Image (cartoon, rainbow, N blue to C red; front, side, top):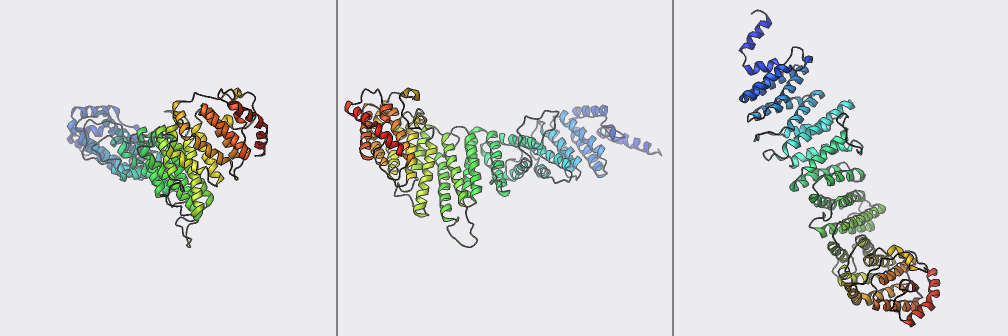
Length: 612
């Protein structure tokens, strides 16, 4: 044997059978591709002699490493194709040793600086990730793959098309790692912070680099966009998160938004948490909200725009979350928001975060703090809308208990009287949001003495804005049939049936409420009408309050009391009373002499109203 071919034949005849079968799948010209007939023989041999599978893998790995070093990339592709087919066909107890050789070859490709080899290795890994193995693996590690795929997600390759392909390969690789490890208890926990701190920022980086995808899913023939792929992978990751893993999955999101100053723009932060809230299991929603609240506290001395961004995200999260998703610590949620509201008021009035005016102290912009305060108030209302009636009642009492000036045990505001007044206004605005849409059948539980008495005491303060807010809260609680908009315009109506008022018979609980608190209500309405600083809006709100009392809570005694109150108002302040002739018309309990007085005074009252 003097020729090269003869020497090769001699060596081949002395090789083990599995090596000869492996060699035969490689053609002389790599462009011809895998020799399918010989690949079928190799597959049949591997299935017939599974104990040889690990040696087949080791030999293929050896050939691939040699071909990579010699830049024979055609043979590299053939080797990976053969490995993929063997993986798909063989599910035996010896598969673990073969997988080790396979992962070693994938790692070799991923370590290459050639984009095509990186993508080839990723595609093979993704195919492997979709295979359900029959036997567990006790020693396999995917740490390298998490790091390498995350690195590929941040590729800065010069050619934009190749850069996009590398990043998409990295995303698919991370998706494969998650699928392979998330349900395997023998694998390293993919939810550990060391892994999540690489996976989640890599996904957010690619999600941020493209425009939001709002169209239909791409078909198989269409090329999937990077943003769509990233969002799908992110949703899949979150959908697999169990109760104990939510924190580790969300923390990297918060850190990423902090590091890249993405709270201020709000749009991307809101988008991220919409994906989170819609992807996780609904019973875990309160965990995300609690993490956001904790992050808000941690950023208490950050700029108002950052805090406002976090609050806006909270607002969106509360709107998405199901009823009761605030979780077991309901009052803690509102306590955090109210604390932020109080801090913002102090920051606005002092102009600094630490109360000092030293050189280098960060100066606060008042208009940004006001925007934050409005966002917090809206968020409080949004959270309240997710609560059942009994919990909303507790929240109302809780907020009222935080108003300075009502309880001697409350610490005064650090900003003096102005701060106290602003906090009162902000907390009352929060109460307006909480009571909006509040529905109850029992006024005694809606407005117990512990709530009504402090609230009515605020209706006699000198501040007209505070008094107006108190009246608005009373209107929201008393209006149970949505009659309030029908009294928005004060006018003379010849036929009140055109208002289409919804009136139910006064219940026993309503009678008990008016018997217990009616005189107190009348007194504060009467005193409120005599306030010199009241304006047109105050009197219009008082008119609506009287009208709602006569529609919602009027029994025989209440009607008489309302007429007496109207006459007293006429005598003392010339206040409007003509409403009683329209909204109580036809009542059998009107006393004749009271009714005559109403008719006599009607014209004078209308004139007085117009002056207001």
